[in-house]
Length: 186
Image 1: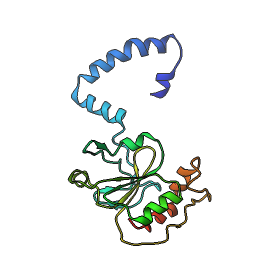
Image 2 (image 1 turned 120 degrees about the vertical axis):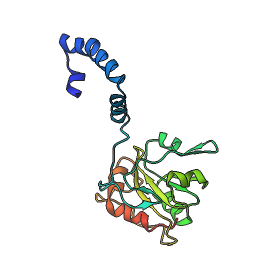
Image 3 (image 1 turned 30 degrees about the horizontal axis):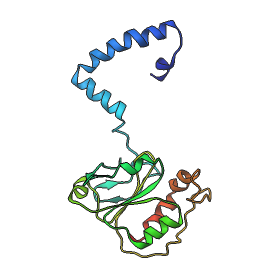
């Protein structure tokens, strides 16, 4: 499909500008085709559950899920995703250990006041969710009540620091890094 869209030449231009729009108009008029086109374009069927970038579960949300959208009292939990970077989101109250860990490792933390809408969306109260730049949950970590040192290791398999933003995805892709987040008190 990509080759067809990017092909050069008169025939390709004719197909793109004359035939494809006719085909798309007819196809979009069929309910099943419209649903399929929506799923392909919106990418809502992407799943990272079996990825090494995804661990844990809290509430009904598992590592690998797309972060559920909730707007409560004018606060949109997807608004912080406009800054394309790793972040931790907590629905309820983050523990001091997690706050300090995020501060020491340059990880943005977003806290949202707990509400019934968060529970209905599947979030667990006071759990923390490590959110990837693409809006998928890398780690869903339930509130544990543990209080380890906030200086828990923050290096991935390359030894890159989490504060090195150019290497952050590599550092946080590490299973060890995700496990370190499990030990932070929420």
